[in-house]
Structures are given as C-alpha cells and as structure tokens.
Image 1 (cartoon, rainbow, N blue to C red):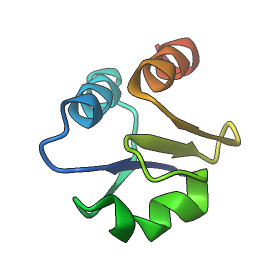
Image 2: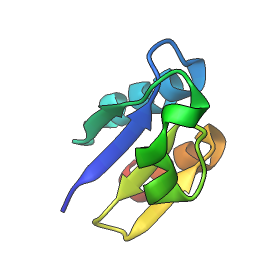
Image 3: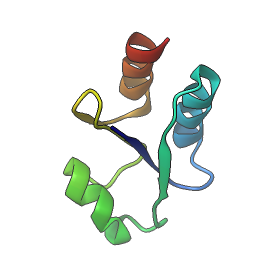
Image 4: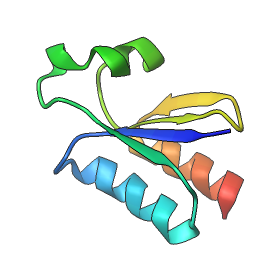
Amino acid sequence: MSRTLYQLDGCPYCEKVADRLDELGVDYDTEWVEALHSNRDEVKRVSGQRAVPVLVDDEYGVTMAESDRILEFVDQSYA
C-alpha cells in the first residue's frame, strides 16, 4: 500500500499537508507538479482536477483534494 501527495513547490497548502504527514510519521511519496495548471495532466488523471494538494491513499482507497479535507482525513486515520 502506498500514499502519494501531489504538491507544488512553494504552495503553503501543500506544505501544511506535508508537515502534518511528517509530524505523524506517515510514509508517503511526493509527486512534484508543474506550476502551470495546463501541465498538470497527472494530477488531472488521478483526481479529475488540476489543483493541489491531492492525496492518493491506496491503503484507504481514497483520492482527495483540498488541504482542510486532507488534514481532517489524515488526523482521523493516522493520529
């Protein structure tokens, strides 16, 4: 099972999610995305939209966007 966080360098919402995952000791892979929305085909393929952050958690079978939703999921699942 794996977890992947799609994020953009310098994105404060992405950093907030990554910091919480690190704080809880949750293992995850990072996929860095392009700054231009039009170049985020991989994010679109996995989540249906081009915004980040996006967390794909195979263990729980979820793919989700929006940092607040992701943080809520992470806290309920891993804290």
